[in-house]
Length: 144
Image 1 (cartoon, rainbow, N blue to C red):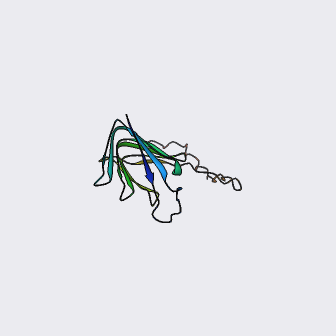
Image 2 (cartoon, helix red, strand yellow; image 1 turned 120 degrees about the horizontal axis):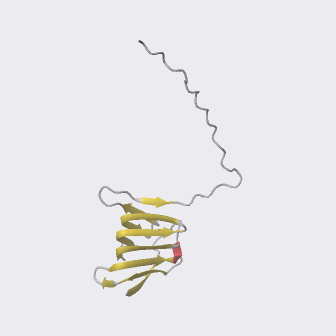
Image 3 (tube, rainbow, N blue to C red; image 1 turned 180 degrees about the horizontal axis):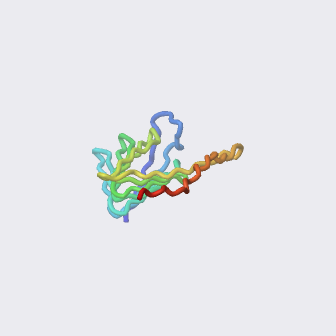
């Protein structure tokens, strides 16, 4: 199993800036890095962890494009961030924007599950429901 820890260094000011040199750790069966292109490819049982943004997940393959600061995940992708989760066939994480772009397999859908916090000051109010009109229990008179 290969383990690779990549240091991410912010290039501009963000609303969601991690601390400088935050590690993005990728574990997989096989990894290769191309120093000319700056692309790191991980294949087989990929697991990734980005604690600075509380992100973790799994996929069949991951490619980290260091120059673009972009992580592309493919093959049964599952991402968990602060209790929220997303499943897709392909997912791209844009580090500088803190944004995921997810696409499904053909004729499938992306699934996201978000934790929604209820406001304690205003609990949800029941929605009034109008009663159904009474059923007509009279039987029609047959024509003989």
